[in-house]
Amino acid sequence: MKEKKEKVQKEPKEKKVKKNKLDFDDEPEEKVRKVKAPKVKKPKKAKSRSKVTAKYFKKFSGRFLNTYDEMVKADYANVIERAHQLSSIQKFDYSAPILITVPDAFKHGSRVSYRLDKKEDGTFSMMYDQALVYLLFFGKSSLFYYRANIDHRNGNIATDIAGEFNYSDVIHMETELKYDNIDKPKYITLELEIGLSDSTIITFHLRNHRVHQDYTLPALLTDTEKKILSILKNKIRESRSH
Image 1 (cartoon, rainbow, N blue to C red):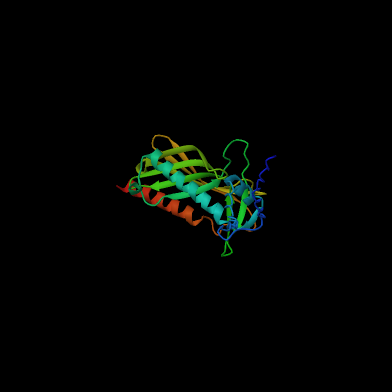
Image 2: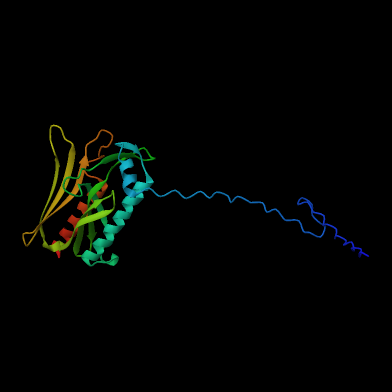
């Protein structure tokens, strides 16, 4: 007799779970929202000194600009420090220094640019991008002097000269006020020439005023020029009386 084949029971197929269905035991995935970081404005780059100066002198006249004035004052502070070092003096060696500037090309072939600034009080002042600077330090028995050329376009300083002389050594003084051209003047200059006992002659260029209808000098001498001549002459005369 043929043996009966045992029927093999097939295991039930597992039901496929659709991907969009989750069991209760499964933790739902948290969706993280992307928060955009606020845009931070980059600080504006400071304009280079040369660009500020070039823009400033594009116009011959205009409003007073503090930015340029601060740069000029920084240059003056620099020359005072250089004068101290070259003259080997300190603040207690003299009274308050007197500073004079006249327009002067920094190097051969360079052209000086001018600007007429109108201040808040309605007055005008003449500015220039290159200058010859004089510093006078009146000591008790000696005058310490310093001069240098400054290029305000970049802050460069060159041709430093520092010297001194005793008031008692002065045997001659001459002040010369003149125009560059009598018929059609463009500049009024003022020079102070000092002769010493050893035949040395020292010349100070106190003024190189550019003539302009909106920028006239109020008198024969400016207040600064009066102060320089008065202090120097009084000290020289006092030294002769001793």
